[in-house]
Length: 407
Image (cartoon, rainbow, N blue to C red; front, side, top):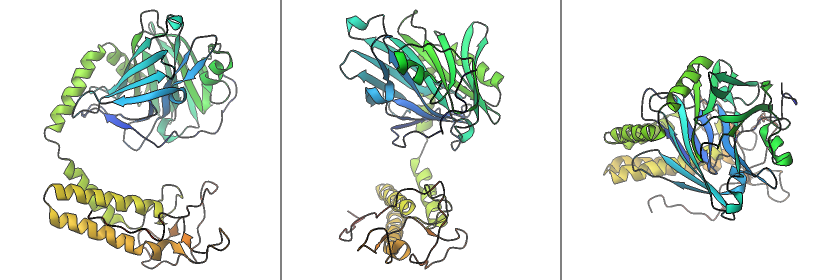
C-alpha cells in the first residue's frame, strides 16, 4: 500500500482547451479534451461526467533530467483529416533533442480512448537511454477525492485500474508496462518518485480512498512506437474486456474506422440544428443562471451574461450566413437588450473594495432562477459565497467602450 493517504487536495486541470473528441458512434460513450499537448478530462458515460484530471508522459534519462510533458516540452496540435475529430499532438524537447508524436481518438466500437505514440530521438547521446512513464490522475465520477487504484494482471497483460462510485477505469499498453505503481498525489505518486532522482524506485500495488495517480513505465524494448488504451465501464471486467479487445486490433484499423464514421456523420450533419437549439435554450432560460460557474449560486452573473451575449452574436452570424435574416436580427436585438440591462442588474454605486471607486461590477446579483426579480438592486443584494470566496471581478469593459454587433 502506498504511503501519504489521502494525498493533497484534488484540483482540476486547465480550462484552456485545444481539442474535443469522440467517436461518431452509438457504441462509444466516451469523450475527451486536450490542452498543453496532453489529454485532459475523459468523460463517460455522459458528457457531463469527467473521470480523469489529465494523462501525460514523464520523460527521463535516468541520470540528469525528468521532463513533464505538459510543462517542459513545446506543443503543436494538428488535424490530419478533414471532417474528423482526429488529433496529432507533437511535443518537442525545447532544444530539439527528442519529440513525442501522438495520435488520439476514441474507439467507435467501445468506450475506449486510444493514443498511438511515437518517440523520436534526435540527439544520438540519448538514443536508447530515454524512459517514458505514463502518468494518469483519476477523478472518477467527477471527484478527485475518494478514488482507489491497483495494479492488476489479466493473463500476461499488466494493467492499472481505478474505481470510484461504481465506475471503473483501466489503462494498458500494447507493448506492456515494465513497471507500475499507484500512489497518493503529492507524496507517493510517480511524479514525486521520478522528480526525486530521475528514476522509478516505487512500485506500490495499491492506493485506496484518496487523490491518487497511476504510473506505468512503457516497455520500449520492442521499439519506440506503441498504443495506450484507457477504457471506462460500470465494472472492472467490462472495462478490461473492452480495453483488451481494442488493443488487439492494430491502431491503423481503428484510425480508418474512426475517420469513416466521422465522415459518414458529417455528410448529413447540419451544425445549425445544434446552434439554433442552443440559442433557443439561452434565451428561454436566461438571463438569470441557475448556478453561476464560479459562485455556485443562482442570479445575474457578469461572467455568464458575457458568455451568453457572445454566443448569441455568434449564432446570429451563423443565421446570417444561411440567409435567415429575421432570426439573425432577432438574436442581435436580444443581445443588445441584455447589454442595455447589464448596469441595472450588475453595477453597484456603493462599492467598498477600493477607496474612491464606489461604482463597479459585482460578481453576482442573486435572485430566484425560476421567478427572477426583473429589477434587482445591486446595492443591497446579499450572497453566501461558496468555496471560501475568491477574487472580485472588477468589470467587463471600460465606461468608454462602445459596441456594434452588426459589424
